[in-house]
Length: 144
Image 1 (spheres, one colour):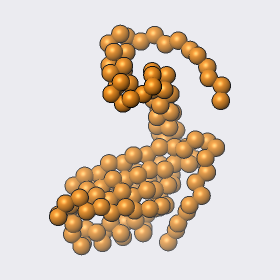
Image 2 (cartoon, rainbow, N blue to C red):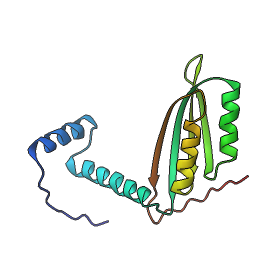
Image 3 (cartoon, rainbow, N blue to C red):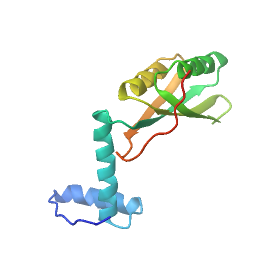
Image 4 (cartoon, one colour):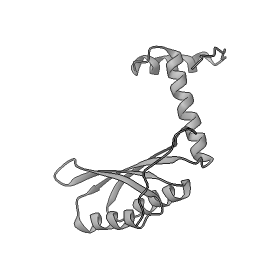
């Protein structure tokens, strides 16, 4: 892939803050950090515009209770989004972390995340969603 150079004018304080992050995260230089930021910005914009290949992970923390786990499973099986995988981790004697990987439309993924957020006993929910590049194809589907 050919690289293209361009100039950018930004306030000095913004550049100083950006350079701190570049150093903290161990980027080789500003260029790689800017490319990474641009990919994130583009993916987020595509997610907001409902691109075709949408994927997400839903991270959930909750107290380990059989009824709550049953509600989580029921929500997954009735979801309009495709549940690709679920990882369940016991983070303490009483708390679990669950990471659910999803594909689908923005509406179906958002609806699923909202449904999970509303389950009694769920303590923390974070959705990480993005659009894959246009040439990427999601091959896994699962329906009930």
